[in-house]
Figure (cartoon, rainbow, N blue to C red):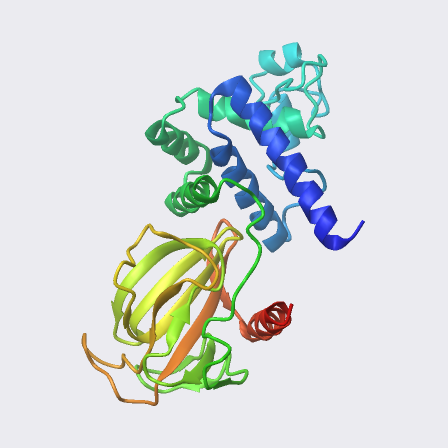
Length: 309
């Protein structure tokens, strides 16, 4: 089995689990998928949490599963878990509530949401009650919107941010010093291209931010399904129909290359036209920048190979 086949099989298994939970709880599958993907990304980005090993990735602490006052944190008896007010749940009907069982874990989390209701607003309340973090709730709800829009889980393909046929150039500029606006480092890669060259979404995601910033000028922020925030700055303008909360796909034009920024709204021309492209990762607590250059090189190479097929 090849990598692509294995990934497709994995997505099918996850979708089957999400649909099972939907059938039992009436919570739409895309909310369960969004929570599971959020937790998968968080666990992969942090050292204090074990890496996901099963088909599902939602992490529940053993003491919370069994009940904080339960003397047996390995308890899988639904009756005693309920007695000690644990969150463990028998999702597959085998008489056991096993923390190692994907169905049990997904159903256990769904029960937490179910106590608030199955509507969009009630699910948002349930998520806040669980995470107590507005940003986590926002990211999960946006993921759910993306999954609902496309109706599938396989949303991993990417595009280079400017057309390959355009006259463009870039090198690794992440971490370089920047002087305007005080001492700071360059959190991104500059892609130099002609004024107005189309700027494209690099992946499946949702427009989280659109507007002016004195440093970045006209800029757009897009969050993908892997908790990555993609930052496009110094644009000449936006696509006419682009708005916050909009779902986008790889290659979709979101604006044009420009030289805006370094001043009040409308300031332009203080530097050659280019796209500043940055990437940021959220780990459930905080968000930090990381070098986008290797990703850009990979996406450019993949797109060139795909275009020759």
